[in-house]
Each structure stands twice: as structure tokens, then as C-alpha cells.
Image 1 (cartoon, helix red, strand yellow):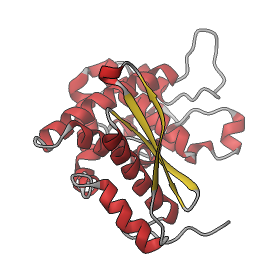
Image 2 (tube, rainbow, N blue to C red):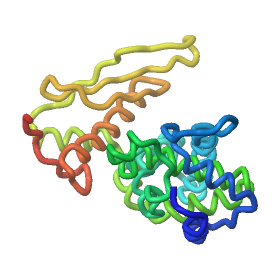
Image 3 (cartoon, rainbow, N blue to C red):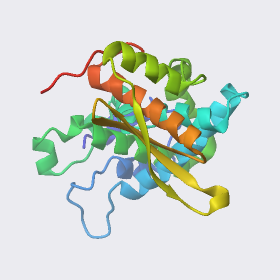
Length: 244
């Protein structure tokens, strides 16, 4: 990890000035880093930051989309809060250059690994929360995510299942197959899990309080997978998958 001067530079990019600088140092300490007795790595802060992120994001989404259903809000949040997007936000802060890593991770390019960056982002958020409370943590989430709301909500606030049908017919000339692979819980609040396959290949899996909502959730996740798979800017026009 770089010097304390560098941490001051990092701190200047956050909407919070730390009173307990050691929390920021801890947030940047990966589990691979050599520790002296009594020292910690950042996994506990990551655990806390994950919950803080979920609460802040839910609050922001409810305020931005007051008419959206719980299901649609959950879909938008899922498209925003995942390892890929968190790694991007970590890169904006250049968190990789301040990480404290073990020798093996250093040599294997750990400073650029999306999983490590995403974890560090959540740990920093957890550190902000512990040092300053929910308000600065909420500001950090708003700073990094609010501008993404419009793009990520586009298409979610209507029928994902219909949209997927159109995409798969056009691209694969196939119809998606929905299969309920599991149901659990008592009859009055049973949870259904739906799995989509296209041309024999498994894609998204979603859950809901009935088959319809589970299918919708699976369709939304499949659209995201198709977009990621082909590097498309949206899930509306993915290209057919090619064999490696």
C-alpha cells in the first residue's frame, strides 16, 4: 500500500474526511496481505459495506422511481449492485493502487482484479459508515450511482419476458424455455425459482412469489447475461453467441 500522503489524496475523492484514518487503511487491506498479530483484513468491513450499499441504493431508487413496483426496483438494483459495476466504481477511485496485497496477489495482478476491487469498494463504504454514519455513506453511493439510474432502468419498467422473446427470436431464431426448477416455503408464501434455456443452453435464473414473477426475473437476468456475453451496450441487440 502507498504512503499516508496517498491516502489523503484518496480521501479527497470521497465525500467524507475520516476522523479514524485507520478505518480507511483497514478497508484497503486485502486478506492476502501479511498481518501482524491483532491486525485485521477488510472482509468484515466488506460485509458491512454490502449492507450499507443495499440500504442506500434502495432508498435512492424508491425516491427516484416512486411509482415503480417492488419487483422492478429489485431488478434495477440488481443491475446496479454487482461485482462488475462495483469494480468500475472502484476503478474510478483508483482503489487498486492503494490496496495492501500479499506477494502472490501482487504478482498475479490483484490490483486490477474485478473481484478484489469490488470487495474493496464495499469495504471503503463500510469504513465511511463506521467513521461518519449513514449520511456520508449515502452521499458516496449517490455520487457514484445516481447517474446510472436512467440507463439501467430503461426497459426494466416494462415486460422483460416480452422483450426477451423478441431478442431470442431475432438473434437465435429460438423461443426461450421457462422451467420452474424449485419451489420452497409454505403454501401461502411459496417462492418459485424459474430457469431459462435457449437452444439447449442454460441462461438466467430468477425467483418470485409466483411463476409469472419468477419468469420475469429470469428474463431480466437473461437479457443482462446476453448483453455482457457479447459486450453490447444494451440487451436489445445482442449478437448470436459463438463457440470458443
